[in-house]
Length: 288
Image (cartoon, rainbow, N blue to C red; front, side, top):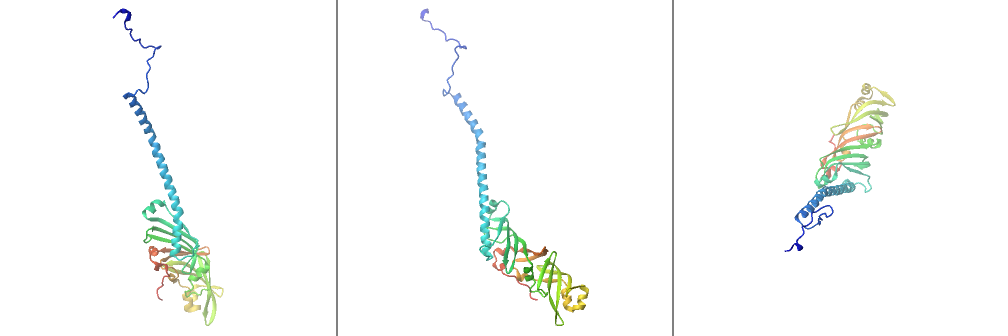
């Protein structure tokens, strides 16, 4: 080869002739770099995906809870009205305690609160407030239930109508009840007024005398026996009255007090009242 056609050396790279790098030439190094970037992006994205899923699930749970709370009161109200044979337009407030969804899944409500301003049960009309616990949704007895019945003077008078007390009218004035009527002494009707403090003992109504007036004149309890004999002695001793025959058999009187001008009756409810229809009928009192 002649010197005229000799091969010239490749010029050294310098600032005027930089070496160009062609991107994405398909080499293993490029693939590894792109894969690493994609993996990093996926790692940054997955917590947000999980967060969105959690938020959606939480929203669904909240929505389901709202639906359950909207539907359950109507269902319970219908069952209570049917079981107690109440009017279709009976006012009844229903409230379930706690978060409902787990309770509905388990088939038992932790607590259920029922209240009404006026309802008639076996002839007694009053405002009822009852809380039941362990309420089965698939049949069975309640774990427990208790509440109060608030009655006015007329209804309280009805409770005493079967007693030996001279009851024409009853006036309630916290903490006492004053019974007014008349007794017969030597063939004459003598008006009396007996003030008593009501309470409860072993399921019965207890009336403890506070004062007694005869013909509008208040007399000392110690003198009643000498003036009115056996009748007076009966009036001034504590009265124990069974009222079980005026309440459903599944209800037991546990307390009674006067609140303002109404009588507040505390009751205990037999848990089997939801399965045993006989407990919805009037109870009985022992024979005298």
